[in-house]
Image (cartoon, rainbow, N blue to C red; front, side, top):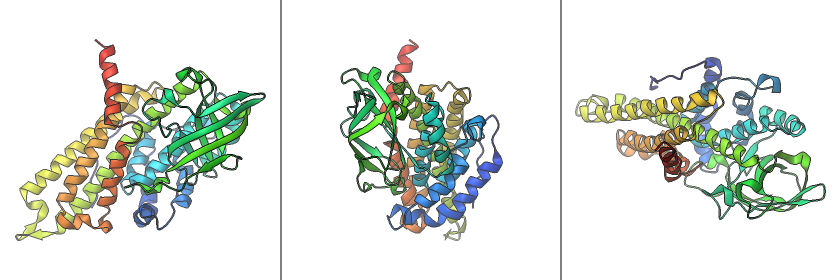
Length: 384
């Protein structure tokens, strides 16, 4: 059984691409997601296969991309996350790196890096967070020390999604300690560079398909040709990337909740108690109806937040609303969907424990609910 989504985005959606994402999810995620989450298999090959379908969606056609809508990208995320939110998070981080690379003013760097990111030859990672620096990105200490002919990069990054298999590391560094956002630049590091190392994958409660690691840099030598965003412009690029990521997380949480409704409705329609199907008991029918209302409200807010992106001017507060609400709604909604299945919901074969853990992880990605409240509160204050 499949829950039929009611709220639809405005604007043009490439339905063929969305169908391709849906088919991929059924063909690969449905069968492999549990093994990936338990560390019994690697999602890397599947990630490289889906990249050409999704990662180029927002890249302009004159750069070799699809040149399609934000709504198309979000719908693809929904369909993939319906089966596995962790794998979709890995893809979304790679896609954010692809989008950022397409916007780099360093044309030579863009032209040599972007094709691999769009084809799946390269997997990208976005490195901003550090072991002692999370919410306050202006306080990063990973150093790109100016030297003759370029920079020397030393320091550490934490919570690197795709760190286990990434080829390209989009890394934000401080060029002038104490200068805050003004001194930050963004460089492109490659796996084969001397001085770059990553840890083993972190053992998380969920979303192990993200291949999350820590990373360390020991005197990596770079030239200006490796700088994607120069000092003075990189911090703004980072904030734009985080807005893109928050919108993607909202769509993924919505997809995960839709998938949970699929499972719960199918079970409740077949399971008989007291001579009738579980779905025919009003208490349970009303519980699932509330979950569906939360899902449709969350999707409406997410698509509303997507509209400014289509025009190239995202509204940070609106994106924060969408991310906060979607994470919360998905976690609560999947928990309620599991109630409809009783103890059977605890079986891994039903996928809901993995998805519940997965959306809990998304709460910590790209800013917790409290961080989103900071963004929203600033907007409220600005309007007073």
